[in-house]
Length: 116
Image 1 (tube, rainbow, N blue to C red):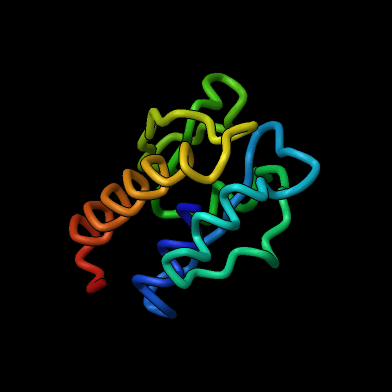
Image 2 (image 1 turned 45 degrees about the horizontal axis):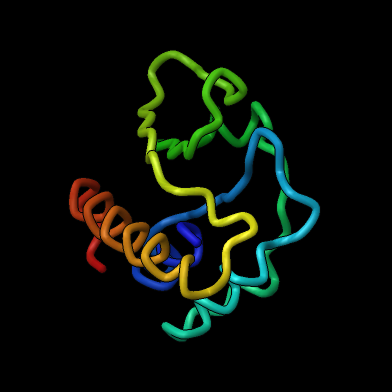
């Protein structure tokens, strides 16, 4: 959902990679539905693992509960976003998570000086 918000709000002004330390087999259908409610299509997203190359290339790395499993490189800016895990939740329960992610993405873009 964060990648969807970033792409939606920043367009081509920012490059976004979404991955995880232990990615699911498929994207969460409730997350897809919740994002569709705000006209953001994330149906083509595919869960994928982080790679050292991607993290090395990033200016900012946002983690969401991966703890020690995420690659950490000196000099990179890391932010841990502690959020409820939407896995197994219905759309109604995912909406507040979606909305909190939007708020955090807007704050991040502001700090980066990227217009939304």
